[in-house]
Amino acid sequence: MEEKTKKSSKSEKKQSSRKAGLGTRIILRIVTILLITLIVLCGGYFGFKRFTTVKSENKLALVDRQLSYCQELVTAKYRYSDIITLKKTSGFAKSYSIIKYTGLVRAGLADITDVSYSVSLDGKSITLTVPEAEVLGNEIVSQSVFDEKQSVFVPISTQEIFDEIDRAKDLAVEDMIAEGILEDARAYSVRIITQFMLALGFEEVRIK
Image (cartoon, rainbow, N blue to C red; front, side):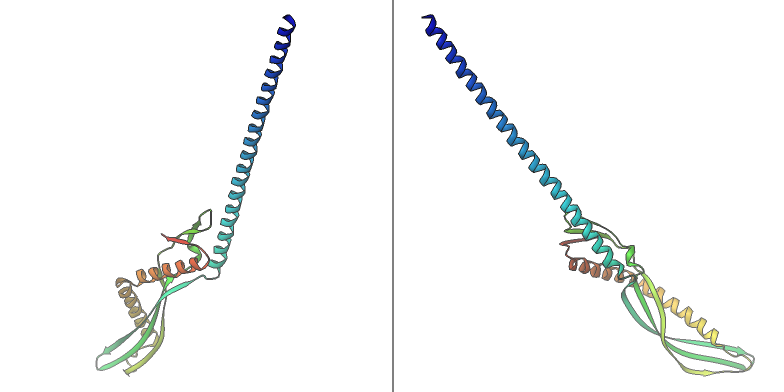
């Protein structure tokens, strides 16, 4: 009886030892699988992060390069005409000049590289801050004398004519600004930049 009891006890110990070993192996396998999964996930995350960072940096370089090709962005041109009259008198002496001229006003962004922007990590969207438009130029493209009379006692000099034209030009620009030329120029600038960014591959373009 004692021998049977001893044998039974040894058998139970072996079975218990086998179960313990099996349980340990199962736990080790689970831990190994979890570690491998964690490594794969971390590697995937950092790989994706590196990929998206590189993609974003490439898009930034592309935008910088494209913007550097265009400094001044003219988005509005307006032609206008005016007639100025200069008169000078002294006693019976009298001089006058009637001159018609045509001017050209240009409006837009003075330096497109002043546009600031940020690109999303996935490189799909871009947000830009576009400055206000301004008058970029106001030149005389033609002028002609309608009528004139010059007296040697009160002559009208060429400089006086230029000065009068300059004053008329300034007034013309002020009127155009009051009528919204700069707002129109900026709105068109936004449209051009938006289309430009979409052409570079961005799916979403936001303008501030």
